[in-house]
Image 1: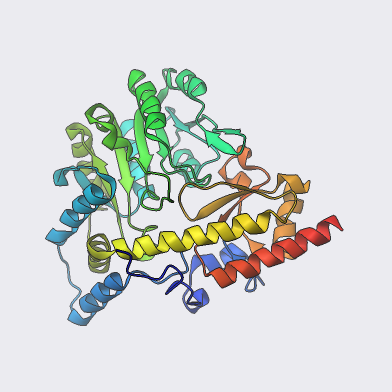
Image 2: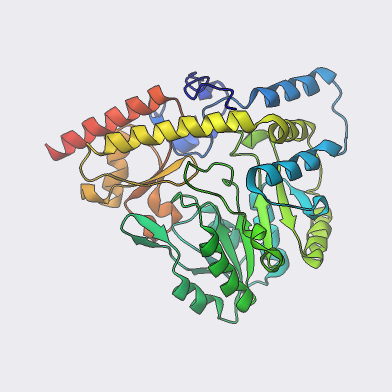
Length: 397
């Protein structure tokens, strides 16, 4: 049963500038950006679940912070969470830890492809995919999503063609998809999985946003489709987005194939990225053990915020919401304003007072779009939308 009013406690305004939060830092919002709607960095403006705060306080009160092992209950809590929330049965010994998902993505590319091999991405997609592959000297092969009547879908004919190339060894899947907000359906994932299996392409699935799914949609972990899919998959998950603990948690790499898992274990040891942080450990265990009611309330609050955006954009000609199925990151189409790229983002910053992630950061397919984080108070979002409506009115006057 829901234990939180959907409009409380998430209405509390918390000054992110009291700590060096990236979301409000000059390196993100720029100089003189203190009055902007800070919607560019993907974290929430909400306090972590009470159970997480209590667990971290208890660990702090212990007062001794020497070396320690991973608590026995953490992986048990994760396995139980995946089964209860997503009907996904995962063996505990298939789970490895990593400092973060980007580390796991880089390790997967390094271990299972060679320099010059090709890795498929599906733009517009999380920009760090490009950075990881470029820095590891892998060729990036793009399988752009198709934007059709306001909905994004995969181009399977193009995927088949590019997966069949001898140099193509891997695909980075984003499930649910950042930034377009698609929660891929089971059949879509099976089709992708069958194509990749047929051509020997390893699926590395970033499922960071899997817990943040809206009513009427269902997150399907790629590896949960069945043994043949799990055997050709590395799944990367983390509670960072789910419980807003990005700065004090780790990530998990789930690998069913024994040989790939052993290779990851060896690489973890070689790079010394298998160490434990006591605060991350207790935060994650508390989140997975007791965070479900809080998450349910967060999703309800986010759905209210989506409706607020949906209603506001009906009054702003030239600006369209791409309907989200999950995540708290909205993909908004500003192409109807008729502005060039530089003009658009100058307009958003100077006139609307918005700091967003520029759409073309996710690939050329994102030109004229922006990714907007709505995991903030309703009052803050209402002010931001009002500023946008006024700015658009001046633009058309």
